Structures are given as structure tokens and as C-alpha cells.
Image 1 (tube, protein in one colour):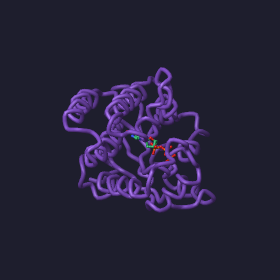
Image 2 (cartoon, rainbow, N blue to C red):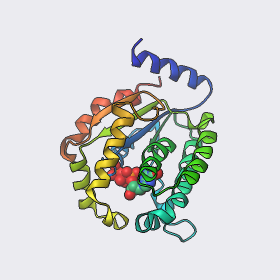
Image 3 (cartoon, rainbow, N blue to C red):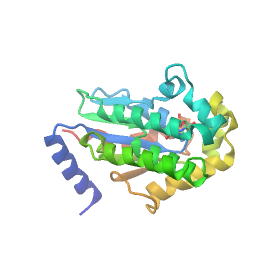
Image 4 (cartoon, rainbow, N blue to C red):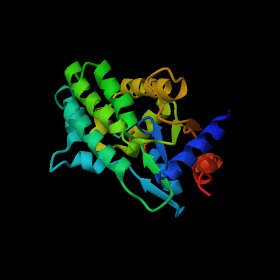
Length: 230
Ligand code: DGT
């Protein structure tokens, strides 16, 4: 059976349980997830959730994102614990629209970012196992079920260019090597499918395209998201 048929069945069964069709947008830092979400804000039947980065920058006054970048060994666990909590809250948000579109998910937090910290020895095995115990519990809930993954596929060079251009203060110390490694992790997770598991079928967009032409690419993929609900 085709991926589309399988998707239709999943959607039908999930609709019965009252859950919205849920698509998560994934891709490297700088791949254009925010722009992709903005494109869909014109549709009334889609509820859009940007990443809660402002919460990570201000957890009761603490900028955990900044701490993580300045002393990863000390703060990775703290940061990822909070990322996991804030992402869970978005997965659990009740909406009236039939379609939910999220920037990232609990899955990329674990499979890309914790993965990288673990490989670099920035998060030690006991901390990873605590994250994993929570992760298993969280992902056993119906709330975190996903119907579609939208992979904004870039080359690491383009992603890095965009990061430099936007100049987010916390990211000033991010080296190219980090973006290259995160790229490989995303590729192996969502494209080669050799790392961890995909939470849903994956569609792949060419996100290297320039902003001036990318809306054509978005339009091409709109039906995957919009035509799922009658
Ligand atoms: P975009 O619109 O594709 O350029 O997306 P960004 O770069 O605004 O969003 P994202 O999620 O790729 O990166 C957010 C920042 O948080 C980035 O500096 C990486 C950092 N980060 C570290 N750990 C995590 C994690 O577990 N999840 C996410 N999303 N970001 C993390």
C-alpha cells in the first residue's frame, strides 16, 4: 500500500478519537521552519505553534538557551528537561481547528539535540537515561502522536549562512561543525531512516531554495497538510 493510503487510514482512525491531524516541521537550525509556518497562517483550519524559544530564554528569569550555549556540559540536562516539558505542553494543547502544525516536537529534541549532546559527552549517560524515562512516558500518550513529518532539507552550508545572517545572540558561538553534525543526524533520522524511528510518514522539501521562490515549493506540498481533513 502506498504511504498516502496508509496516511489516510491513520488519519481516519485518529479523527475518530477526536485528535487533530498533526504535522510537525523538522529540519536543521536555519532551515526555515519559521517561514514555513508563516505560510500556513493564512488558513483558518490550521492551528500553528511556533517553537517556545522565548520560554527557553526566560524560565523564571533564567535564559536557559544562553546557558546551554555558554556551558553545555553544565546546563544541557537542565535545558533539555525544559525543552521536553515545553514541547509536551504544545503537543497537549487543545485546539478547535482540525489541523495542528507544530515547529519541531519532543521527537527532534530527543533524537537530534539530546543525541548530539550525548555523542559529544556533553550530557552524561545517567542524565540521558532520566531524559529517556520521561521521553518514554511522554511518547506513550495519545497527545504526542504525529501524523506527518515535514522535513525541510537543507545543505549545512545554506543553514549556516542563514544562522550567520539572522544573528541570534545565543547562537553567536555556534561553529559550522555543529551545524554539519546536526545535519547528518537529521538526515539519518528522517531521510536515510537509519537513526531512531520516525514518528510518522515523512515528506521532504527542498529548503535550500531562496526565500523568493520557496513559496512555490510550499504550495506543492500544501495538499499533504490541507487536504487531509474533508
Ligand atoms: P528555523 O526557522 O528553521 O531557522 O528554526 P530555528 O533555528 O529558529 O529553530 P531550531 O529549533 O532549529 O533552533 C532553536 C535553537 O535552540 C537553536 O539554537 C538550537 C537550540 N536547541 C538546542 N536543543 C534544542 C532542542 O532540543 N530542541 C530545539 N528545538 N532547539 C534546541
